[in-house]
Length: 410
Image (cartoon, rainbow, N blue to C red):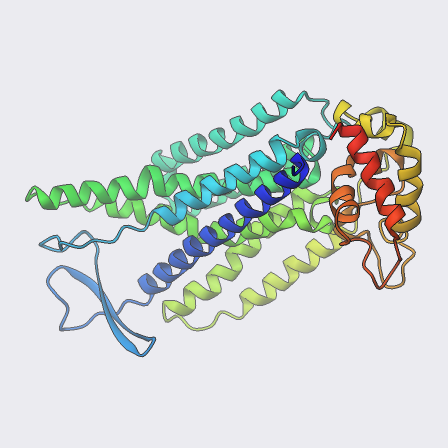
């Protein structure tokens, strides 16, 4: 009978795989249509009411594409809707959020040194913030303020930086950046679900009923699609950030996130201008490089040091059981002896300047928090330590396995 930890690890892997697949589909179609839209050309042979056209070659064939700002005179029998890429990406991402940060809230979501929250409180804050983000953004877009898209984008940037700072005040650094990515992705998927697709359905219904569609629906959808285009790259960075402690473990992680959004703008501006036929704006890469260097410098500014006693006292019950288990002392010295050469505040292994994945295994509290990871990586598998570094024999792995199973009652 497989243990819950194994089922959980494979469930996380499967959902993460699904999330990556659907995200590739969504981002790919989004980038394609933005490039297509910006590259449209006028032609004397355009169909009535067509805005522009483009010829493309791919896979040994030629494609002739025309765009209508509102709609063609007659609706074709076969119409492809691009929506499920967005929906499935958000849904799989939310399931991943539940599996990692809600189920494992005491380990990955809550930082008792910042905000001593109960699990239900942390989850409630997480859910409320995602809903709050969409409502505020949507109302701004629909207000008179949102009629100026540049002004709206600047205010959205300010809102995202404020949310980044706010998340770091209540959650772990890792969870804070991940939540900022989820906050932004919710806005993006909300644009598709609540605005873009419904507006397109109104236009289709008008055409089928013989009415002339109102051009405002296309204009609104275009605004939201443009926002999604500029937000995509920062969201990818934030989703990957949980694997890179240099991004999330800095005291200025919220500022790093803000600079990442600016990098998204400069990179997309280069490609959007190129697709529009406006040439190559190489200054955008100089700006992007400068922003990235600033991020690297900020990442070296670490978190304030918490004493080992405070860290141990702040352990949730689900982690404290690993310290209280009678097999802990043997497991502790096994981990310290085999792992802390690399997984340390100041690694001793030549060439390592920080602990891999930001996982430090020196104190009792640190080892207790990482118990499941240690068990999966070194107890029931031989993933860690790498075979070319420190040899861990079967008895050492058995000590870790006994400790984990005893503490969890599995």
